[in-house]
Amino acid sequence: MRRWLVVLVLPLLAGCTDSEWNKLLSFGDAGDNPRPTVVAAPARVATVAPAPAPVSAPPVAALPNAFCLGVARQDATTNDFDTSSQQKAAVQSYQQCVAIFGN
Image (cartoon, rainbow, N blue to C red; front, side):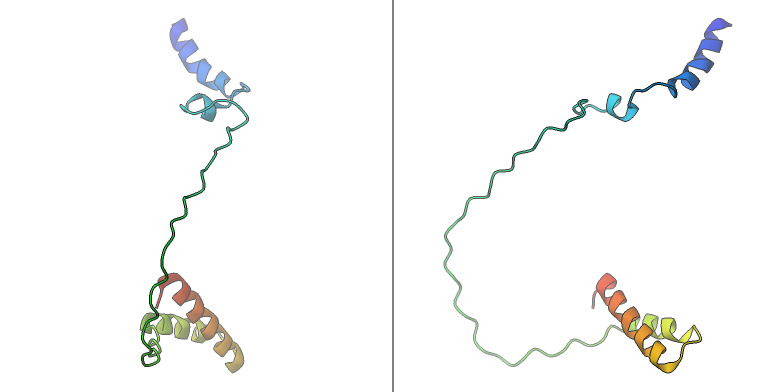
């Protein structure tokens, strides 16, 4: 009977200790001061600059992302904004969508 009582009470008393359990249960350094890591600089290799590419036609602008346009349209029109606020919300929403999901 006493053993069951001890088994039940010990976990409750363990919360009152000053030990840092996350450090005790890990296999890493248990000290408070972490060891500084020394990183060697990568060796520089001499390279020859590539020949310049031939001049070609200017790049074609990428088409707008249809998904992001739909998201921007929905964000701008679902609220009761005036026209200038709708345009600002659409531009900001489109830019944010392209930044997250790419073009």
